[in-house]
Amino acid sequence: MIAGAPRPARAVVGSHREKEEIFGAVYDPKIVRRIWSFVAPYRRQVIISVVAVLVFTATQLAIPLIIRTAIDRGMAGGIADHRVLVWCAAAFAVTILVNYAASYVQETVVGIAAEHVLFDMRRAMFGHLQRVSLSFMDKTEVGRLMSRLQGDVNSMQEFMETSVLSIGDIALLVGIVGVLLWLDPRLGLLTMATMPILFIVRLFWLPLAKQSFMEAHETSSIANGALAEGIHGVRTVQNMSRQRVNFELYDEKVRAHLNANLKAAKYAQVMVPIVDTLTGIAMATVIVVGGSMVLGRTLDIGVMVAFLFYIQRFFDPIRSLTLQYSVMQRAMASGQRISEVLDVPVDVTDKADAAPLPDDMDGSVEFRSVTFGYRPGLPVLKDVSFRVNPGETVALVGPTGSGKTSAMALVHRFYDVWQGSVMVGGRDVRDVTQDSLGRHIAMVLQEPFLFSGSIFDNIRYHKTEATRAAVVAAAKAVGAHEFIMRLRKGYDTDLEQRGSNLSQGQRQLISFARALVADAKILVLDEATANIDSYTERQIQRALTVLLEGRTGLVIAHRLATIRGADRIIVLQNGSLLESGNHDALMRKNGLYARLYSMNYASFDDIPDEMVKGGLPPRSTS
Image (cartoon, rainbow, N blue to C red; front, side):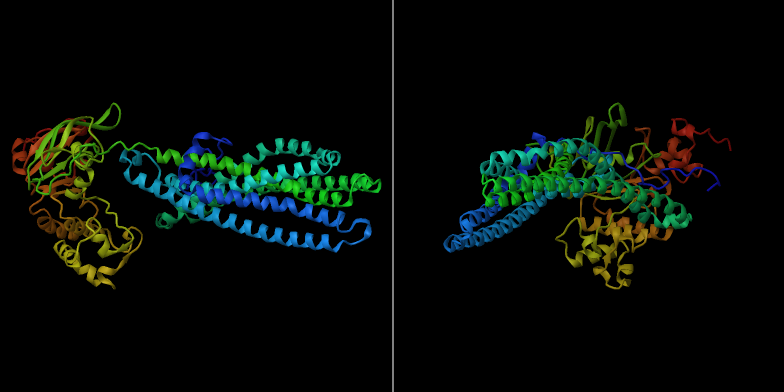
C-alpha cells in the first residue's frame, strides 16, 4: 500500500451491502393476512394463549382489590375480622396459583406454536426456492436469501411471541384505568395527569430510537459480511499478505457496529428513568392527595393502598408496548421480505397435461430454430438448429459467451426458449415433466459440487437407491476407486465443506462416478476437464469411453484437443451456429475450426479479438 494513499472503503469484499428496509409499517393488512396463513393451523393454540394471557391479566388486576378488601373490611375500625381475612387470604392464594398457571400455559403454548409456525415458514421458503427458476437465482445474492431464511424468520418469531403479550399489556392498561376510575374518579384522573407527558416524550423519542435501531441492524450485517468474506478468503488474504490491511478494515466495521449498538442501547434505556420518574410522581400524588382524602375520611385507606399497587404496574405495559412497537415494525418489514420470497414466480413449470418421458425414449436431442437470452432484447442463442442422434457424442465449442452452456441448460429445461423448440427423445421439453427430464439427463459441471456427507452418499446422490456394489463399480470405471480406498474410511469418508479435503481432480472423478450411477440416457459434460491436471485428464478421457457407451453425449469444451474423438463438433460464435461436422470434415472445410487447430490454438478463448467479431485469420502461404 502506497504511503499516504487513502485506504479504499470497500477493500474487503462483503464489507458493504445495499440497504434493505429494516422497519416497515406498524400494521400492514396484506402482511398480517400472509402471516395468518401460517398461524391458522395453530389457531387453537393461539386462542388458548390469548385466553391464558387475559386470565393472567385479570389476576394481576384482582390482587390489589383483594388487598383493599382485607384492609377496609377485615381491619375496619382497628378490629380484625378473621372471617374476612381468611377469605381474603384464600382468595389471594387461589389468585396467585391461577396467575402462575395462566403464565405457564401462555408461555408454553405460544412458544410451541411460534416454533411450529417458523418451521412451516422455513419449509415453505426452502421448498419454493428449490423450484424457482434459475433466472431468479442467477441475479439474487445467496447471502440475502440466507438473511431472509434466518434473520427475517427470527424477527417473525419475536413478533409472534410478543404479540400475545401485547394483548395482555393493552388489557392490563385498560383494566387499570377502569379500576382506578371505578375506585375513585377524582384521584384516578389526577393520577393519569402524567400520561400526556409520557406521550410527548415518546413522540420525540420514537423517530430517534427507530433510526438508531436501524443503524445497529445495518452495521451488524456489514460487519458479519466482512467477517464471512475474510474467513472464506483466508487463503488469498495470507497469500497476498493482506492480514494487516484487512484487520484494520474489519476493525472499522466492528467499531461502527459498537458505536451504533451503544447509541441504540442509550435510546432503548432512556425511557426507563423517564417511566420511573413518572411512576414516582404519580405515587407521590396518590400519597399526598390520597392521604389528605383519607385523613378527611373521603377515601378509604384500602383504596389508597390499591391505587399505589396499580400505579406501580400502570407504566409497565406502556413501556412494554413502546418497545413492542419497534418489534412490530421489524416484523412487518420481515414479513414483506418473506412474502417476496414466497411470491417469486416459478417461470418454468410443468403443463397440466405434461407427460413423463418414457423409459424407452431414444435419447436424441434436437434444437429447432432456437432463440434464447437472459435479458429482453439481448439473445444469447440466435436461430440455432442442430440434431444429436441417439448414442452420438457431440461437442460444442466456441469462445466464452458463445452460448454453449446456455444451450445445455435448455436441454434440461432450466430455462424456456424465446422462440423455436428443444426436443428430447422426440418430444418438446415443455410438454414433458421436469422430473422425468432429470431422470434421463445427467450433468457434470466444470466446478463439481459435493455435498456434506460420505463419498458413498455423494456418488449415489442422483439415485439414492443405488447399491454399494453399483457405487464401487462406477468409481472403478472412472478411476476413482484407488484414491477412495486410500482414504482412512474409504467410501464412508465424510467430505468437508464442498469436498475441500479432496483435490480438484478427485472431486471431478467423484462427479463422474455420480453421473455413471445415475445411468441417464443423456450425459452433459460442461467443461468437465477444464480444471484438472494432465494425468487426471487422461484418466477421465479413458473413463469417458465407459461413461458414454450407449448414451447420448453433449460435451462442452474450450480446449480443442479434448474433443477430437467426438462424432460431431458444433462451432458456436456470438450465439450462432458457425460450423458442424466431425474433426476431419471440419479440417477439410478449412473454416474457423480448421484455422484455429492448424495454428495450434489450444482454446477458442485464445483467438484474437478480430476473430471473435466474426473474422478469420489470413490463410497461410507456406
